[in-house]
Image (cartoon, rainbow, N blue to C red; front, side, top):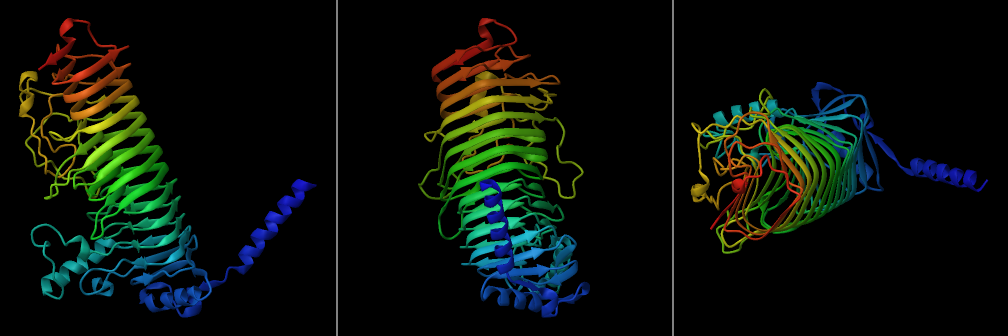
Length: 506
């Protein structure tokens, strides 16, 4: 009886909460379905009405075209399953200078986007119109003649700034002209069961979290023509990303799958990732990058399946900023990762592919952990890792012998990406300028021939290798240690037990 009474109370509470939520159907505010109507004012009027006492704005079945709309405190934008909110293809509808996002909010709280409908930015058509306006001289842009229209000239799909208590759930987000979702200095953000399909133009980051705190991203499926899920620390006001949790997400990207950086002026702290799949992705499955004077610390990633990606793990401490402030990276754990790295372009055939490397031809690039001289990546644990490479390396393409490791460029100020060093002298893992690096139950293998050593440590202190397994090697030096100290190697399985299998260099 107590259980039945409790369930009855819960049902009545849910009914009362539902009954108290006022709904505002955009049809009642004059909105019309069809491609021939622009409903910006009608939808905004519905939002303004809902904002007076809090309520749900309904986008019913049908296609509704709109320009930028502003979400206000206490408002939930709800899209029925058959609803599609279409962005205007007239670039001027988004403003004269910096393009306003299709759905935006500033300094609002308790806001939501929900429902099983679609928000379609029609990014390719918007950019086509933008190019026409640029040729006419109606709009101006600094980069379009040499590359493409700048990101500030292309409307994002969703952009919330300085907001609190945000929920984005269930919707499908399509075809942005720029970043798909941009959350800047937000607090208490929940993104759940969202599908992103945005491969129509460049810079289509799926989810960007900028200087935000207390964020949950769960059960999302992201297919993006740039980074999939990306945390950034940038902008005019330096801040940090803290307390971010990502779980059960599937990601495809023409850049990196899950990434911290490149913008890294403030920092990243207490980041946890669980059970993600990254597939057909051009750059790295996991990329942790601090290059602008900020910090990365206390990152815990567990449960990663990377299928057909250009790189498995890329951890980079660099110095791209022009000041004397240096970045730091410490306390990183990556566990239970299985990756398949092909010797072909992993995102070939997608509408917007990752760019061909600007460096000369190189052999397949290993995972890497790299700092810069005097500034070390600290305390990285790689546990239960299995990476299989396609192999196929050739000395005719490039060759850096183990007695010439100094030939690898430092590239301290370079844009951080896995190909930034050009050729690397190992096929499995390359670690340089680091301290406190632990490999526990790490297995590395390749399919086709590779002439290079398996693992290289260069200027690394406190190395612990426990359970490292390397099935085969064509180089007599399977592990190369240069300028290293405090090295512990145990339970290691190498393809042969010759003395030179582990090569130590001064």
